[in-house]
Length: 396
Ligand code: GLA
Image (cartoon, rainbow, N blue to C red; front, side, top):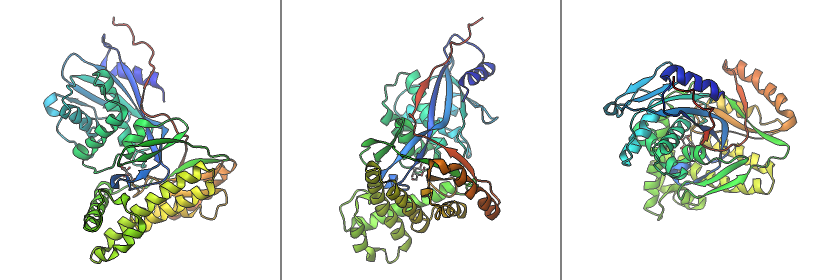
C-alpha cells in the first residue's frame, strides 16, 4: 500500500492547511477455527493479516465531516445533524456508526476530513467492514484524545455494527483487527474478552486463503437469522440449565435436552454446532501448541462440515473448494472462514506444494462453477496502528 501516494491524493482532494494530516491502518482478519460462536460466548482463534484499510485524516476548523474513499467515487460532506442518516448498503455507514457511538459516549467530534483506501477483497469474509470501523475509531480516539484502550475501541465498533449498520455480529472481527500481534493468532474468549496470543508456528506449512469470488446474497439477513436461532435455542435450554450463553453447555448436556427441541429441529442443529465448535477450538489450540498440525487440520475439516451441515452457512462454491483439497496429501486442513455464504476458505498447505495446490483448485473450480478462484498468502500481523507520513507540504 503506497501511503505517500495516498497522502498526495488527500492533498489534491482537500488542499493544504496548517493542520497536520495523520495516517492510520487497520488490517483484515482470518479466523482459523471457531466460526459462529463468538455471539454465543464461545472461544475463537483469529489473526490479523497485512491487507486492510488505511485512513488519512485531518481536523478542520468547521463542523463538517468529509468522508471519501479512494476505492469508490462517492464522497460525503455532512453537517453534524446529517450524521444520523443511514445510507443503503454503503461503506459510509461504518464510519457513521462509529461517530454515533462516540456521540453516545459523550465524546464531541467536530469537523474533519478523511480519505480511506482498502486493499482487502470486498465481501470475502475478511472483515473489511471491521477494518473501516476500527481504523476510524482508533484515529478519532487519537485526534480527540479520548483515551480509550484497544479492547474498548473494539467493543465500541461492535456496537456501531449492531446498532447503526444493523448486523448482530459478535466481537471477534473488531477485536482481532484491533488486537492482532505479528506472528500470533489469538485465542479469544468472547464472553470474558480474555485473550491469549498464541505463536503460530507452522513448521513446513503455511495458511493460504482461497476466495470463491461468489456474489454473496442476503448474507446480512441470513446472518441475523442464525443469531436469532441460537438465541431461541438458549431460551429453550435456560429452563433446564443455568447458562448465560450457549457455548457454556457441554455436548452431553445438550444431547440430554434434545426432547426440548422436538418442535425446533433447526435450532437444535445450530446449538449442536456451537457446543461442538467450542470444543474443537480448545482442542485445535492445544494441538497447535503441541506442534500436531495434522490434528489441527483434521479439526478444520470437521469445523467446515459442521458449518455446512449443522449451521447451514456454507455454499456450493465453498464446499467445492474444500472438497478439492480432501485427497491432497499436501493439505492438512481446509474450511470456510468467517460468516460464510461465500467468501474464502482457509487452507493449511505444505510450503513447497503451494503452487501445485493452486493448480489442483483453479481449473476444476472454474469449470464446475464458472467462477475464478483467487489466492492470498498471509502471515499474522499487528492490529490497528498509526503509520509514519512524510511531513505535510508547507502552507504557501
Ligand atoms: C462475521 C461476524 C463475526 C462472526 C463471524 C462468524 O464475521 O462479524 O462476529 O460471528 O461472522 O464466525
